[in-house]
Image 1 (cartoon, helix red, strand yellow):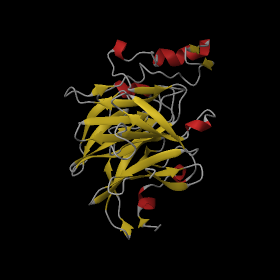
Image 2 (cartoon, helix red, strand yellow; image 1 turned 90 degrees about the horizontal axis):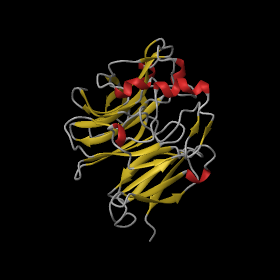
Image 3 (cartoon, one colour; image 1 turned 180 degrees about the vertical axis):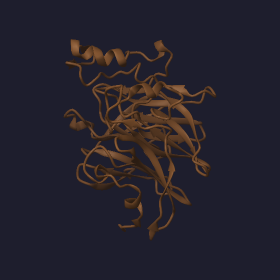
Image 4 (tube, helix red, strand yellow; image 1 turned 30 degrees about the vertical axis):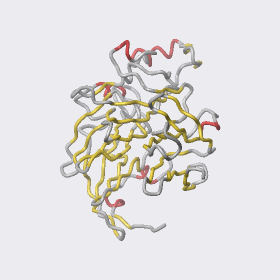
Length: 320
């Protein structure tokens, strides 16, 4: 492992970026010419978004410059009354030679997810040469994994729900208009303020009505004109990455893998899952590690993943 020097410290000067907390590097993408890094951007003293740095590919020194900055930021003290820097997205994924995909969150100012004038709470298509963006889908809370299947022209994404309601979503490009996935009007999760949460519903105290008036979290997407998730998990599994694999990696019925970090004491959910999209079914491959990200290497037919619990880098291969 080599330490590559860079100028990031000259570009990012606020203290919390370098500490343990909700700010920091959120996503990473490398192509043949450039390295793109998504990061928590302090636009002003108390206003943040997730933006992108770009540097020419170099193994000795990375000279970054600011490449893409969303058209607004969220103030810590805002008129919506909520702020959380973890609800920020920041995932970067390959699309084609001229563009890549980028997810943004709303920092818990949820109304932005339904506003097409806003670049927050979206999956964006970013042009590599100019940084110009286009909204591909909206109504997102916190997308943590994206994979584009070029032959099928499908975008699959994984998304953290609130208290429950982790999702796997599919954008099949049925329309030239952006697809709406419903957040925060519809979700199979519940607000963290709810007194009690179970699969059937939440017991809502008088104090909770403020949250549900702003963001009702209806337990249907289709009924309100939104795209239903292909899968959802309540309670949450801490869903994270998603990757496309060749049919021979596990067997002919598995074409995607997704991973999880495990929350709410669900240790068995710290796993990689083999997903059959045709039958919309999955099987669990238990690891016992918080898996944040993974990449499939088709030339080697292996999956590389990171385990946050122990700081490991692991390889998943087909059993011979």
